[in-house]
Length: 251
Image 1 (spheres, rainbow, N blue to C red):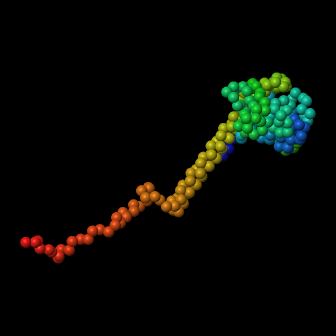
Image 2 (tube, one colour):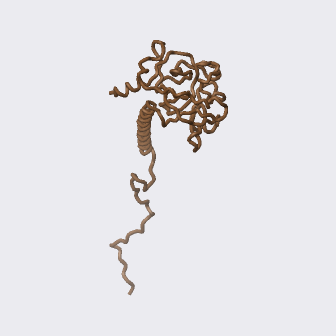
Image 3 (spheres, rainbow, N blue to C red):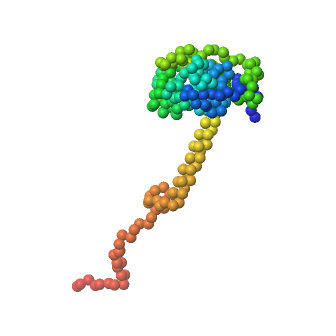
């Protein structure tokens, strides 16, 4: 049974937003499951977290990324100017590729591709979660007023994210992650269970393959589980002496 306290915590920190069109840096329209974050123009994927610096965080894959923006021209400072020039037609993932914990690279696929492509580097500073789980409002109205009774972050975005040099995009996953931390715990629990089942299935498959191979294959003499063979016939044995034949000694 679900924990009621966790349910109300998620509801408290979730943003129910009106449906508004989001755009990629190229001006292309994003899919309908990209939603505007409350009190901001940047957009994140539905059910994922909005950060106060204009970025997004996906708890399922534990990934930080730059989403879309409601300003089609992307001229406003509210649009996240992160990885928007070389990755203009979709979202951009951010991964740490070096030993420097403050520098992150952007890309469109997994960590290995991001670090190899080196499409851009960005400096990491602290930020808070503005909405832990962005949700679409069924009525299409303004963000739900029920969330106003819960504490929320009102910090401004870092202005250093507007220049073209390595930017202070701010994020600080260790500070103020709130519900994304809970989502991360849930994601890790799911991943552990899923991986454990895969390992068990693989082990069972290997056992079955070994049994089939043992039944169909032939074993070499002396291998475990094989029966010893009889010694081969070394050849004809010398004839035995006849006890009835005698010969007298010469006198």
